[in-house]
Length: 423
Image (cartoon, rainbow, N blue to C red; front, side):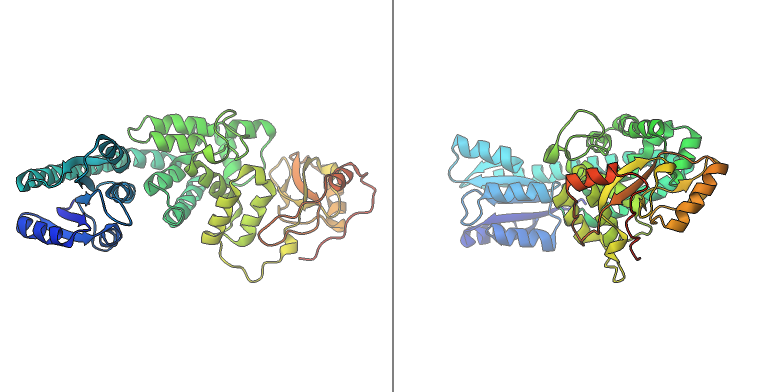
């Protein structure tokens, strides 16, 4: 927001009183004794167009102050004053603090006044450019989001939910440009304009996809990034969109790229929240929705996952932890189903008839019913199940040993089935 307010910061109170007298009537001037008080005034009385700081101050130097101001209030223009104008000090100030002007102390009043007026003009240019960019972006983004909303309202609605979550957590995780994160969330699915209508229909209905279909969907971020990248000033948003399916361990899409914390923070956030939106049934995610993500630890930044869980998860007093069992995830055919398997996908016939939804355990009665249906109908295969585990402890996954996993996977179908957990 454009403003004409100026903040002058020094540890010398006599100098501050003198500046106030000299500049009275010329500027909307506030003063602060030291960096700590300056940050309080910036937070409580801002925004400010210009911040002038002395280099040598106890506790927080002028460089440190203006560096913080540049990060938190990028539209505030910084001016440095110092009585020790060596080359190293000047270079450090300019590189770290985004300094607009650098003046030696004592500074002639007319020179200082001219510098402040130039800084005010710079602030006006910055805000004017931002307003122009925002208006241009708003028009471009509206076109893209309207296309997505018309193409598939269900997927667009999911993107809107992710954007809402991004807006909620951006400040708490100190995301540097919150608007970029929200915009990336909204534009993530735009690459789906390249998908066939029948595939979009299956996706909007949360239907299981065949391997080839999954491979096609996996590449949609590439299309989305190219579309977004054509809009000026959205290069970073395009990078986030392109990396939305890259796993924390370096797998996923794209095949090559950064690993771990080198993956852009926005992409790591969306990797979590996009999957969360697929699982959560309402606008407020539950603890068990986050717990389900823990079965794929390699995909996510676990520290970030825990942070988002603490910020977004709504406590569910009736959460039964045994409903979300641990175990080995398998992609199997219908004939390989066993009593006690936990469904991760719907059991659906090729005629789009859902016989049993995901989130259920297979009981003896259900298995017998399925065997009858197998003779009359063809099912969409493979299906995904979780098998052979116990239960998921709140907030962390309990993994079985590799030996037991292997034994469970290789056990014959006639072996004694596990007891069906009680919901």
